Length: 81
Image 1 (cartoon, rainbow, N blue to C red):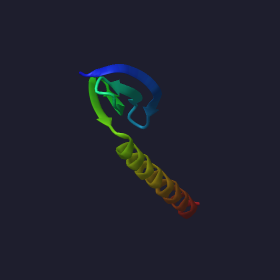
Image 2 (cartoon, rainbow, N blue to C red):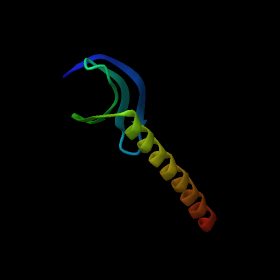
Image 3 (spheres, rainbow, N blue to C red):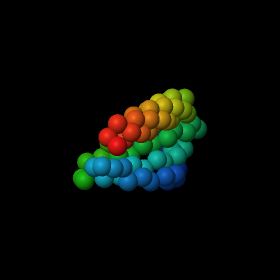
Image 4 (cartoon, helix red, strand yellow):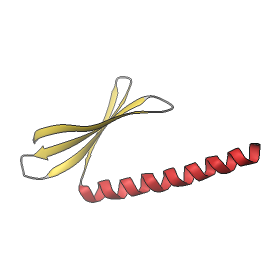
């Protein structure tokens, strides 16, 4: 790998399947940075590096989904009461 510095930013234990998600700031020898997303499922790792543009788009998509999921959940709870 070409990285020269890796700094852990955030760790999350995702539910319901308990995947460990870690976000890392990676400084590369070629003088650029990426966000490394490491997902651990038992013994298997999925690792990918993304640039700031992709991280921003992914973050927005995640927030949009969460907003809609929250609303769907509230709507479903209102129907079952």
